[in-house]
Image (cartoon, rainbow, N blue to C red):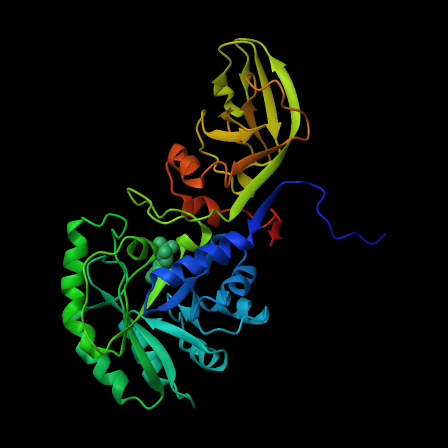
Length: 367
Ligand SMILES: Cc1ncc(COP(=O)(O)O)c(C=O)c1O
């Protein structure tokens, strides 16, 4: 018998494309006079990169992913805008593919530079050069940029060069490293015709300034597209959450005071309680280390997670929510329960929670 193409388990991530477009439009508005790069690596921060790319295409000038495989998947799905590879190439064999598929690799270290200079290409390849201005993760040292620029300029098969750097503390505008990073970057701006510094936090809450009349800028917006606050002390812009993670109640039981719930018997009822079991677990990306008390939205109320998160299930204390029924859907995060609120309880950030939503959770798109 042919299997019908539907999902029998109602657990799903609903993706609000209207909210996504609202956020992209906002990024476009904030990036006055700049080009906008939509960051859609890690499967569009877990939202589905092809659908995200299609929705934001009218608002962005290019999109960015981490590496070639992610870019080729977008091309397979008909995405046509230029794609930047934020980690660049892992081997020289990728460079002809960058040319063939209109991809712009970042060069962040010497070996990538040598491989590019030694690879014959028939059309000039646009590249991004990353400067380590103080984050100390990736990038050429400031003093190497003159040499890199000179060698790229001399190569016939290298096109426009964008000079980029990444802030370690953009969400804290007053952090002293921001000024040091800007000071390290500023003397280099004459080495390229384009610059790129800001991520979502720096776009939402700009700090410092780099003045240079001839320089065009790229702004790299990621998390804000998905309606998630990057962790600013005060969110100024009206972002709209894009993902709503939902799962059904599949069990309801009464337990007695002193009974324990779940693996390791780590939670013990301090009163006679009602426990609701919900069909989502760590195999779906719900964090296994979520502690008791992590909020879950059920029947319009925030209810506490209790007991250890299992592979396919969680348990919540529904004692104070007598209206909760079997098959009711609970929101793990979304418009009514900010993912950052859950993340804070779990000791992580919204970025991690959304990117880890598992492949077995269908993404259902609403327009
Ligand atoms: C180099 C680079 N630029 C931009 C971004 C987007 O950052 P955000 O999602 O905070 O906007 C990232 C994301 O990690 C990144 O690695």
